[in-house]
Amino acid sequence: MSERGKGVWCAVGAYLAWGLMPVYWKALRAVPAPLLLAHRVVWSCLFLALLVLATRRLRSLVEALRRPHALRSFSLAALLISANWLIYVWAVNAGHIVETSLGYFINPLLNVALGVLLLGERLRPLQWAPLALAGGGVAWLAVSQGAPPWIALALALSFGLYGLVKKTSPLGAVAGLTMETVLLMPPALALLLWLETQGQGALGRLGAGRGLLLAAAGPITAVPLLLFAAGARRIPLSLVGLLQYLAPSLQFLIGVAVYHEPFGARQLAGFGLVWTGLLLFAAESLWRTRRPPQPSAAEAASL
Image 1 (cartoon, rainbow, N blue to C red):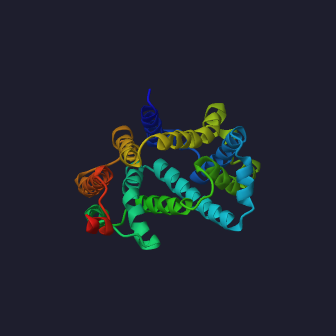
Image 2 (tube, rainbow, N blue to C red; image 1 turned 90 degrees about the horizontal axis):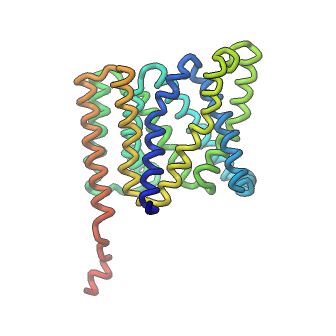
Image 3 (cartoon, one colour; image 1 turned 45 degrees about the horizontal axis):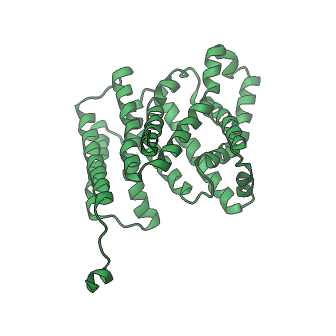
């Protein structure tokens, strides 16, 4: 198999794993969301630490800890990703899988908006229409449902800001997430130990099977990230951008077809506007990557 083929399969595997994530968290719905978050942090930290040791990246991790700017950046990233995880787990187990999928559908467009607002980036002319359509879809859902889709907006905003912070990260994806879980480990471990002493912990109450499911939060968090990193190195960014919609699409289908969450005409109208915006956004990005490079003004003048 070619390197590109391997990259496609790695990326598809990562997005399918993320898309199937609601099924995993639903299996642990008896555990409160804050407790699930604490377990995810602890088991992810242990699993990722083993990966870092196995791949001999510990030195870069220690060097990053010595830099105040990097430490502040990782602390902020840790807060954002923990907020994203907490909202997502709570929403899935509260019956809002469809709305969580909306959050990840609008995330690429929100990233563009954040780039304009916070980084001073300029939109290309054909990028305005997708943003307007997605904004119209969110506004329609807010009006038709009597309240904005707060879960979707919170997930998209927390993950979008997390991505902005990670743009300046001195570490790769796996080492960076390891650092973030290391910073989150003390409060997470303290919460788990306190709840266990109060008889409210999950490991003693759920039995061996679900206890193993909790411990699986480590590899379930890290393996898709490894697959994504392997895929992104081998395939064009434009293809990664198209494949990213596999995850929210699968989440949406699971919410509607498996867990029978309500999805009527009003939701369809709002989602339809967002989906149309995403199609235009993907088409514009694909067209731009395939368009031959244009000569600069100086080069054009010399022709």
